[in-house]
Image (cartoon, rainbow, N blue to C red; front, side, top):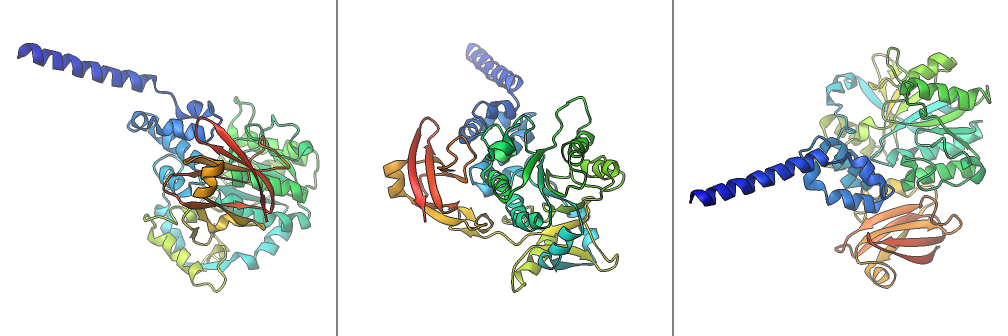
Length: 411
C-alpha cells in the first residue's frame, strides 16, 4: 500500500513539475501568432493552447490577441468577449457622473462645421472592433472635398515606402492592424479618393512613444506641406489632447501650434451587442433608437455648454446599436456601396471546405493585398454572407492545412 501511495505521489509530482515547466516555457502569444502572419491559422493555433494560457502570466495578453484575430476573421462577438477579459477593454462606468446633464446631438448637423473649421481631425478606434474604421469611411469624401489631402494612421508601416506609389495595401507589409479587412478597405477607399497615406508610429524605440508619434506627424506632413489638412486614425487614447496628459494629441498640439479636433469613437460602444450593457450606455442607445433616422450622436453638456468627453478629447460620439444580418454580419459593415454575397453549403461542398476561413480578394489586386472581407465559418452554418463591392474576386478557402481557390463575380 505504501509503495502504491509512493508511486502516486511521484506521478503527481511529475505532472505538477511538467505543468510548471510548461508555464515557464510558455511564450507571449504575439510571437506565436506572428509565425502564421496573424491569420486564421494563428487563431486556431492559439485556441489549441487555451488551457496553457488561462491562469498564466500571459492570460490578459492572450485574450487581447484573440480579440484582434477574431475581428480579422469576422467573428465580432467573440472578439468583444475576449477583449472584455484582456487589457484592451476599459470600464467607463466610474465616469457616469460626467453625463448627468447631457443631451444627445445628431452628428449630421455638426459634421460640416467640424470639417470646415478645423485642419486636423483625429479619430480613435478600438483594435478589436472594426466598427470605428467603417464609421470614419463616411468622413473621407467630404473631408477631401474640403481640402484634406493626407490620412495618417497608427497602423501604417514606415517600412512600406512604396505604399502611395503602389496604391494598394499589402498583407503583412503595409501595417499590422490594416491586415484586418475593414481597416484595409478604409485605406483602400482613401487611396481611391486621392489621399496620401502617412505613417507616424514610433520607429526609434529609445524615444518616448507619444512624443515620437507627434514629431513624426510634423515631420511627415507639416514640414513637407505647412498648410496641410489631414485626418488621423489612432488607437485607443493616443489622440487625447488634454493639458497635462502625456499623449500624442497633446504633444502634437503643443509642438505644431495646431489644435486638432479629437473625437472619441470608442467609449460608448463597449458591450453594445451583449448582455453586459450598462445603464449609462443603454440610455444613449435608447436615445438613438427613438430617433426617426438613426445616426451617430455627440454628447452635449447643457450646464457647461460644450461637447464633452471624459477621455481627454473634444467630444464623445455614440454610434447606433449594432444589428446582425443573419447573425454573422453586422449592419455597419455594409457601407460605401457594398452588397451581400451569400455562401451556402452547396457552394462550400463544391469549391471550399466543410469548416474554415474564406477570404475575398479583389481580382485586380490579387491575394497579396488585404481582402475586402473575410469570415471564419463552422460546420453548423448552412449559409453566411460576405460584404463585398460589385466586381470580380478570388475566394480563398483555408482549412488550416491547405487552400482552395474560386473566382466569382459579384453583381
